[in-house]
Amino acid sequence: MTKSSNIEQINELKSVVCRDIDSRAHDLIDISQRIHEKPETNFEEHFAHKILTDYIADSKINVTRGAFELDTAFDARINGGDGPTVAVLCEYDALPGIGHACGHNIIATAGLGAGLALSAVAEQCGGNLALMGTPAEEGGGGKIEMARKGAFRNIDAAMMIHPADADLARMNAIAIQNLFVKFHGLAAHAAVSPHKGRNALDAAVLGYMNVAALRQHILPTERIHGIFTNSGEKPNIVPRETEMDWYVRSPTIESLQPLKDRVTKCLEGGAIAAGCTVSFDWQKNPFADLVDNIPLLESYIRNAEQFGRRMTSEFLPGTGGGSTDMGNISYLVPSIHPMLQVAPSGVSLHSAAFADFTKGDEASKAIVEGAKIMAMTAIDMWLSSELQADVKLAFGDGKVPAGVI
Ligand SMILES: [Zn+2]
Ligand SMILES: [Zn+2]
Image (cartoon, rainbow, N blue to C red):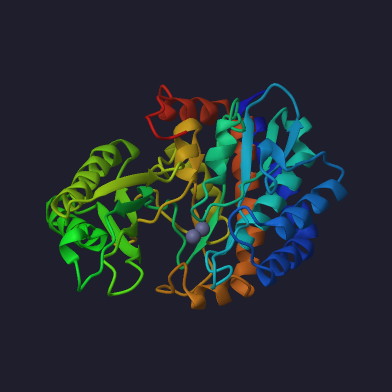
């Protein structure tokens, strides 16, 4: 096949998937609205799981519900030939109290639209597709659990879109691990015999102060924030047990490890000073930083331009650093996690105001355009051997640092 006929074929197939998505737009938006109306948190997304998998099954595609031993995960695979396997990921969990303030209803239905459109042309392209439902992004790490069970083996590229207050090619996502801490002391009457007690609240307060001092001597891109979740039972009892909840964040999963060691030393110091002991419970699924695959991202950016969405592969200054379990996946397979504008600039994710925008007209537009841009990018990946080679080269040797899975 000559190069120009290949380009013609790619363009024709891109029109086919876009028409398919247009024909389903009403359904996709309706499903998004229904998921929005019924927000479900980490690993409890039974309604979203059902509505999404029912729609996939109704489209005559085999889908495994409760995939990879997670009740609310799903997995639909289409084998179209010997070409690369592209994964399109759907998130659908919400936040406690503020519902779909991260707009995962948009992620789910854009992924659904892309996946179904691609399934219709996979054979023609000789490409393979993995349309996966990945629960519990908001702290649970569903993708990490799925990766441990082999969900991302033999995948050549993974993609999803995320809503935001701007069109951004990349999310500046840094590594995070949650730490639960317990200080153990000795109860005594706080007035009659305080000398017999060992004060677990003092231990926690001193530990907190140690971390506060540490914060002056960490990288400007690192973050440590904590709260007291149990400070004792009654003022007249020397607190025998106290608890804290900490988030520790560093630019990469590798730089996170030494920072974690420094934090635990600060907290141990508080325990020693107060004559107490301390125990640490690190959350089992740390989120890694996100490593974007630039050639894949550039294909996405070119496709997005057709819809008037202009973005760069450079980070915009001041976009801040959240965290996502897509970061872990980006160490396992070449990945992208671009953001699509659904709200005016300055309306931040995880705010009640943002939750309103994730069901509005801009949200509907992002679902349809996000589905199209992802499907077009998957077609580039399936049919351009040059892009396949560039994606592979950029991914490198695939070394997976400790803590990723
Ligand atoms: Zn979020
Ligand atoms: Zn999110």
